[in-house]
Image (cartoon, rainbow, N blue to C red; front, side, top):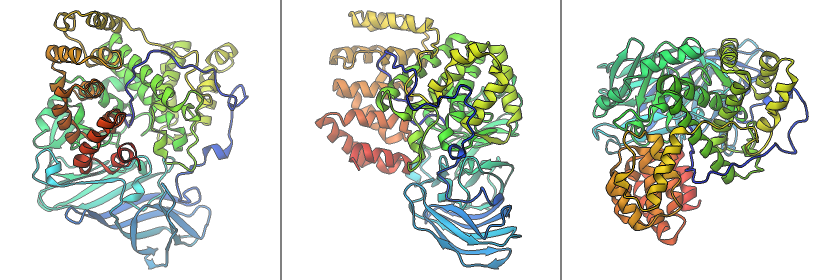
Length: 625
């Protein structure tokens, strides 16, 4: 998943720490404490009962905004327990059969964030559990869009977002990243619409409205995905293609022409792509994140469709998850960095291979800036800046900061620089191969790192100072930095502008998105109205179709009370649902009394356009709930 929060980095000072007084004292980190690997975010007892396969037979009612049907689980009661426990959230359970016999069941009281445990009596030799159910109005995974909320404005649309623990709001399941199962499904939707899942997918609509899916490879529940709408498909090559609403499909096809090449480049780095096809579905604007790495079918925000292929590193990120995350998965959400830190690193290696080192260096530097800002916001001593998180009793989404992404990827970059790229690449290939289709904890990874890469090199172990990275707060002093050749030139042009050089005379020809972001990020906190006007006239920022640049520009406009940009900002807030952009922009408006009134006005108009997960976080910012 592309990071939820990427706060605008406006400072350059590094926030450093050599670790925390709470970090473990062990030299080799060979910790196997079972408490550290326990998944505190599932109410299931999948550690006692193997939930091997689920067959879904569900109907999607677009008018009632409800999914209903039957989930048939194949289980193996390895520990011979008497009760099977599943995760649910706002599900109505109509009936349950065990081995074709009706049984009494119970739902525990709802626990904040986690939902309710469904308790089903089973026998030692039970093999099949059938659950008839329907979703509720508070299903956190589901966004139901009326026709006017879509691009084409003709048909309704539904999509799911199951990460982190939201699959339980549309499927009764064992909902934890360390719990894998295969699935197949029969999905009935209104005629004229197409259904897609994280599975083998159709490429054309059928006349019946009934679609069949198969995912034979076991995956965790957070990678369960469903989308229903008036969707078109275009093939890119024999194993890649794109889906989108009809009015968007040609733009998407143009933007993602290089996906096939991207898959080939990823394979050259870290081994074969093991999921068959790699397709991308561009969703309507309300999608709350950049992308979601659902196997075989990445869900993607339309904010990457800039018209110039300048934001496709997001696809490189989601593709990289096919190795780090989908292939080798963090065992719990406390180990989230094992998914996202590896994926950020892999993404930048793909982009370096395709675009060159100076390009990937810019990605590294912007990521470093995001990490610095995030550490400042969280607090330089906060345990939330550790790589190994402690999210017990909390929403696992609290861990979706820049830390697992950026601190994790910079730790891997340190490893690469310390042992050499060739040796580190061999290590990663072996890591992916030896842990394929398995889950792993932080402690298990550190053991693997120690025995496979570090071995008996005590000097290397000491120089890495792994505890400071994994169990320490802030940014360790040995954090690597990328070369900034292109950004040095950008900084020089910004200095010229601030010294009253006409912006039209600046050397900005052929700048990439990353260079424009660097140019704007390092501006003084609030420019004058005249400076904003001059920049806008020279570079047309208020008319930008690049969402990364536009969002940063609107934040600057709010600070400077540059009202000329407000009409475009209104359109942006009405049509973008990505939290990465919405949260900092609404936060900026909320800093002043006049801005607070403006924020509440916008939010009152457009809240319904946003995904339930975005609504939750924005309610806290704007409505102070």
